Image (cartoon, rainbow, N blue to C red; front, side, top):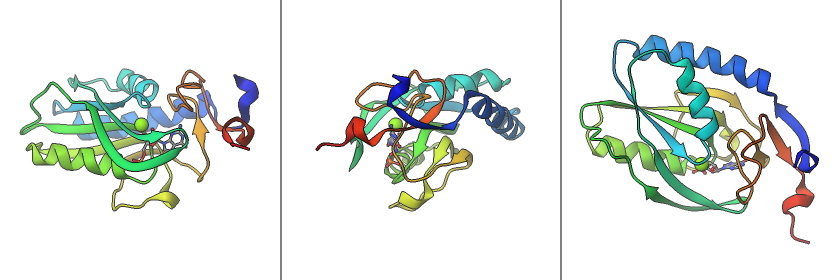
Length: 179
Ligand code: 5GP
Ligand code: MG
């Protein structure tokens, strides 16, 4: 598995350090509130569980599952594969995502929760690729700005693999290039 990685972009140590900082910022904003944290499965699984451990105040967790990716290319249309169980009306919502790429997934989810009457919807993402954005969407808490390359690890997959890598790396082109 590790042999398929060209280089490591963010080590576990760097991720931990950055998550400590982000969690402090989020705590300052939400500690007197009871937000609903909504991890976007499956990619945000590792990042959100690490972040949640660092958020020491009352909150709910309710997942959604969205998909817009097949292989290593975005398909452009977002599907809600699994919805939240909670009523978000009047509640503050924090969407937690692995990476913002085109921005379509989070724009779709943000608007969905706003339509349902959420009091606020903020976005916390481990990575942001600002160069590849196609819709107007910004993250409120961002771990790192990432280059326009195909990344795996720390929840990010290629065809279901590599999610369990404890770091974020660039996948070797030879792994996904069709010759
Ligand atoms: P968006 O809707 O912003 O284009 O896409 C967001 C989703 O695309 C992410 O949740 C993630 O699943 C996927 N994605 C975007 N860039 C990458 C990447 O570099 N690597 C992987 N594995 N997934 C990505
Ligand atoms: Mg995703």
